[in-house]
Image (spheres, helix red, strand yellow):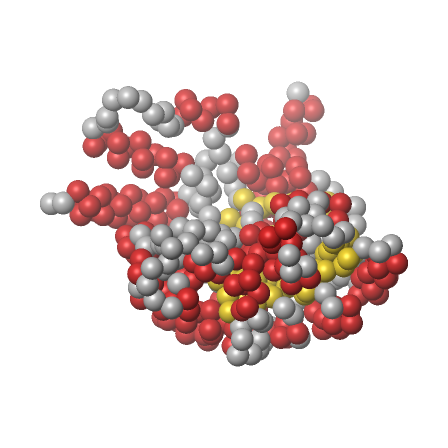
Length: 464
Ligand SMILES: *Cc1c(COP(=O)(O)O)cnc(C)c1O
């Protein structure tokens, strides 16, 4: 048997053990960082290892790793596992193409182009649209900012930044926006953080006010980042009103849909992106709402020419055959680029657009279940709003941070906390479409039992 065949069998053995383990232990046992290297054999040494010892070390590592595919992982903005998407990603690893040229990736370029074309259609961007798969949502926002900079100042990409350019994003938007401003040479201080209303939506009048103030100072407003699904509350900025402002002042409008841009695929929830066709660029993470393995991020642009202008660079050692259309390295950030398209294609191909919509709709259904539970139980306080898959709440008078950490250290569930308007709360994210109503209700049960148990333990500690 070839070594590759043998390792595929090893893979199957370990993967099956993982699936069985996930059933029994949906939350991996927490290993203290101070214990990590004692508890697991992670060391590397000069001598080779025999196959049995190797597989044992590897299996232990796999089973000890946090389990993001299970019904008790709510910690981040991804979770669960779509089997058809996993299949696609496994094959992408086997094929190991680099997505810069048709010569190196062939038909895989075709599937990436097909996805981009269908997504551009859904955004209503028109005939000149284009897109690419950046290495993540942060880098999608980066690409948008670079294109906006170059659209505003044609020579910035060659001569460097000389104008006092300023950009705008809501005060509760993703932290990649100021980071990206630092990366492109404008500096974090060039970003204006626009106040959001109590529901977490950017206030358009505040945006206008700030743009005018900056213009009066002789600064150069060039870019607005609107968010579709803010990181904590899951709020959607009002794209339509922001687009009007951008049009008036000729600013680039990017919509960061990393978290909830997946609503694009659901007729029922697409209204949350109303007027998306008026934006200049839009990005979303298929590894969030659509459940593909990490990372699977896309950016689409109304005018593909901007992608070419900012990201193409001649390299005759690379681009030796075929037309640019089929050499997407001409519009990507990276040179070598892993095939993130195939996992999304295998999912989309198998379930259809209606199947993608069902994933999104299931997540909103689960969010409704969770919100209703919180609303109907007097021990809970709700801080988030409808039309969001983030459910922010507190239970009794337990500080959110304490509650989340206890759930973690007791190996009960992984869930995080967040803050809005000075209040800290638990943030439950119903982003795993494989979960059912029972799984969400079970989460609350686990949480209540944990609080009960820790209260008893604390009271005992006090009386002792
Ligand atoms: C997750 C997220 C990002 C960052 O995406 P990465 O793929 O983690 O880099 C950006 N913006 C928002 C709103 C997000 O939720």
